[in-house]
Image: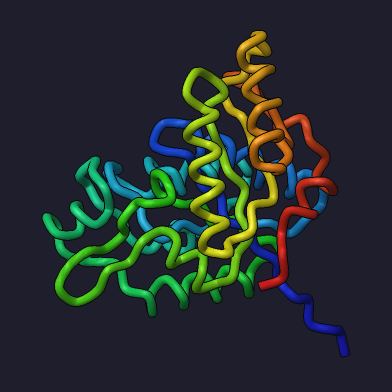
Length: 229
């Protein structure tokens, strides 16, 4: 009888909106799959997309050549391009822990390496009403996931990156590494990389130029970021 394989997971956090978190997530899942890993993707909530195909989840599905059924990629889709908690207030259908948990467990059944992508930055509220209050960090805690942090390589990233890492650490959430996106290798960005590593002790594992087709990191190295879940 074949031994059951324990799935591993990783949560991709951004320092904020528009740092290219979905783009990096797509390259991450793509690298694992091309490296022979049974890797997949799941995101709890997306706002500002008319359909799953046109959402962050649909992008990753396409870029990583997953070919996954759309309803397995995402649980909540909101039309308004605002924080999910506000979109849910306007549109109804607020995030439920039981729905997200069931979807994540299903992803673990399908994949040995599950990459979960967040929405916005770490303080993004997914639900905030009189019934429940759910933040991005709550989802990470539900599944005991380690994180990798995506940050813009340019001006301001030292502050945003260090603060996010300190917040995660205060919640006992492991940070496996930082990925700097939109990297041009300018002297300032080289110093940003050095300062982030010096101030946090967290390695910058990839510096990704705009439009890159890969992360420049081996699939085997990326696989070590994931923990059993």
